[in-house]
Image (cartoon, rainbow, N blue to C red):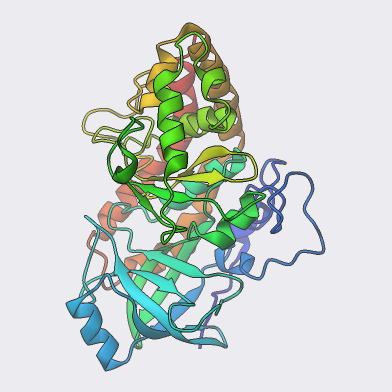
Length: 407
């Protein structure tokens, strides 16, 4: 069985990017390149068995096998894990959990379903290449099939915790389901690569902002049985009580303020108008992690398939038109706004130096033929090409548009 398609000279740039990008440790594998989560040089003694699965130069094939009873179960209750098997090259992982995922992008098994795999759902402590989960997104809101992987690369290049991602071909019960965005899941193995302690709370937004009383408006994804949300209570109280003149200093005990401002800058740079900082429809598409070793919250990007694309008649978000509460308050305070502008300038330079247009061109060449032949995609080949062209233009034009807004 084919597991990973060979790549040619057109992907040489991606091969060069598979470890560190622009000299920034962790651009593709976390701050240290290993599991200790600390900064500094990669630890040569640490071997990451999962790195191959997310290598930008790779286009892996994954086969999901579902017995008839699991097919029926997923048709009746798609959000509950059913038993399945994953095959990758000559590796077989049996008795894994398979469920369908997505909200607006949800599709049933009869269409181009998105999948979440959980390796220890039925076998305690079972892992695949050190992973607990895998996520395959159907690309419904990213007809280019390249934007999402570019966005996560940009976040990692800024030394911000973000998933590794590439493109993959998914088959189910011997049937080609097509090209997918292969996104690293933000779970404990992910946390171990970025943070000193993986025992903290991970929250997924549910459309509410950081106001006192909104604790139950976030879905707790770790430590569910304990369900201690006192860290959120402390965060919301600190933001509420912070003075305009000393805003970031007042929340520094519970927010990694530099990471927060850089995270917001990256949302602006990649035109994520469906996220936290610049949301048009309410806070969306991010997670929060509370690191017990530091007491700090950090934001984690997720659901970036709408990024690098315009919203209506607006090609770009305006970097001083914030929507998320804490960034909005920051931009209302002169000192904080100046600090944010300085970070925007730094991250714009770093974004431009990354050369995402070259990454996009190589990624397009890598997947074009398979996308053209994708039997379940819901967009035409013409729309695929046109969206890719817009994304490519975005990577080249965005830095200048941000600089035009800065003082």
